[in-house]
Length: 356
Image 1 (tube, rainbow, N blue to C red):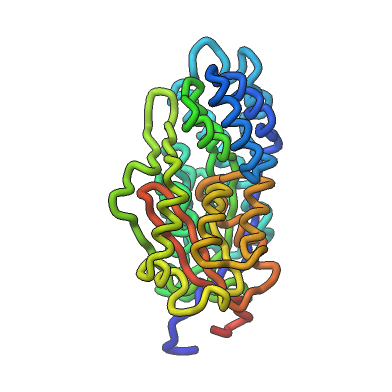
Image 2: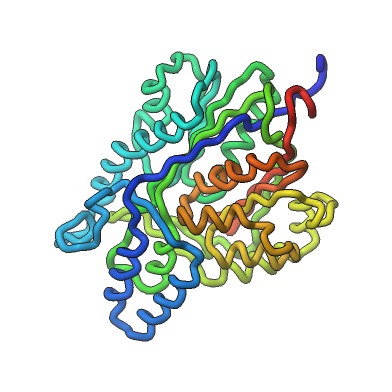
């Protein structure tokens, strides 16, 4: 192995979700809030077809949309109030996910992705102190990149391991999307929020042991698409704008040889053993499936994570990869989409020991 580039691999992944399921309560509230009967009926149909059965919130009892709770007081919670919850709850959920990894070993680097909150000292420092990591552990925060930030965090860990073979990188993605409900939003925003959920995931990336080898990465941005997905900081949290054009634009882009080629890298789509696609919504998964003519069941893990957890922004791709790891695929592609409209991904395969 001397002189060879180390093979970075994901040794383990673990996820954590809060205990409060908010999906049914939100659907009832949203339909009652939309004053236009046509919009209320449309919301109901879209929610039923969403492929989502459960979404989770750290707000606990305050997540209820009954009167006088967090979102149903006389005034919407301010950004400061929402960030106070983030500062308290994000590290707790992240540490719960990390605990699921078991023995961490000697961590040399910590990479954290999150786009649903800000606090300083950051979540990275809070996690490092809670775990008792040495003060010289190198830390990096991937912030505000949205749903594809989990891919970026894992790729970054891979780069670290390839440049420093003795590195053992702890990757954490934690998102509290439920903190950003906009009570006075219209149909489009109400539908967008019906997809999002809270969750955290953690992974160990190193050059030793078995796991999912992190191979070459790829990126892409669609021209004239910067208004399709936006995430704007306002006085009442972060307002999400998600255009209904996204699935169609995405399907069209993935059908273009240049972009599709980045994903499959000269192979036939049916030669790829595992597809870890970020479930940004059922229509997104359908668009990927159509674009690559994937067989039924090819996105089973992505659809199951969407059904049971909703869209947890950057943490979601790690939940999908956790399920895929159990079948030790010979080849695979991880793919996520987010603000821009942009695409981030990497190829992977199962590796045993020092095998490439």
